[in-house]
Image (cartoon, rainbow, N blue to C red):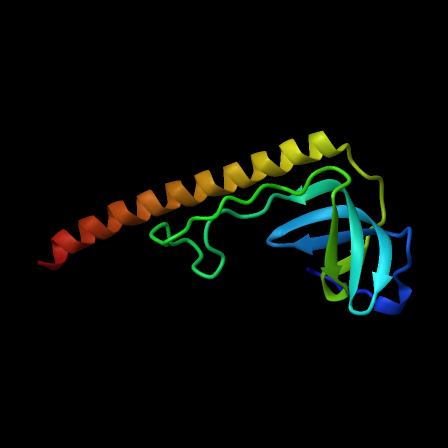
Length: 130
């Protein structure tokens, strides 16, 4: 994430941004214990990425993972290093989920179009290299 909090400043009841398995959420800290916090999900900021995170952008992997966003009020444990205090209003969960999914679809579409143009240019260059 782009900023880090002093972990000692995070308290039960605080609103936080939490990064969980390539997704980002707004949630409420329910419990603190050791190096982790139990966070209740209230909104989705970034939808989790699809596929094998250890082999990004590779469609030819043994298992191409489907990752759903965490559900409204789902509780998840998050390392303290992956949470920052959240200031601001919490968006509606369903609206935030739809917006996050739309943003991920748009990013994948842009990447697909970029790859198609790159492939087209490389095929043309390959012809010229003969």
